[in-house]
Image (cartoon, rainbow, N blue to C red; front, side, top):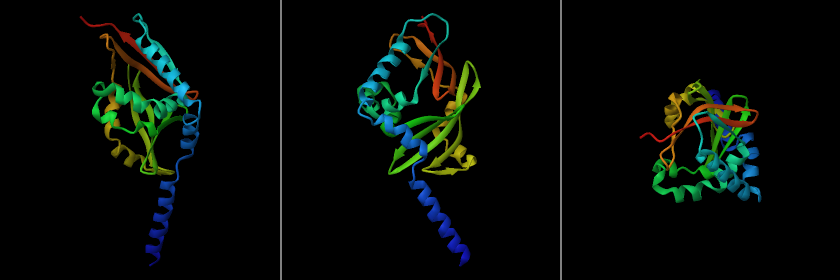
Length: 202
């Protein structure tokens, strides 16, 4: 009887934690939903597109992305952009509700990715693995609401993220050039991406 009661109490506690969003969620989403978020997201999109499409030599180049800008873009620009891009992005990615996503650099070297769906905020934490020139992402934690799950479970639930452990995909530009990610860091509250733009292969 006592064991059954204990199980019920633990289950009820877990349910409460699952329904309670992690602290980082509100902090990340608040700026994304502010009145100024539309113009800021549009400015971020323009600046990022300019950086990616700029004509460059063989030298590596880098950008530092503020999660506030990224979260605003997800909330304000992802869905219109995905609908406009159509068949140029994979169907499974286009169907993702990334307009309800937010990211945060909570600790040095770790990115927290959060997604609200069905009244609950699911999250995972990622760290960079590999060497410069061939970096990927590894899952270090996962949870539902304020309830973290064991890392062993997290690895079992990694799914599509597992394929990024061996390297991040390159970006093909419409003019035939390729932008390749050489290095990635989550530091000083920013997402820092080092890339190289490779010329068209004839």
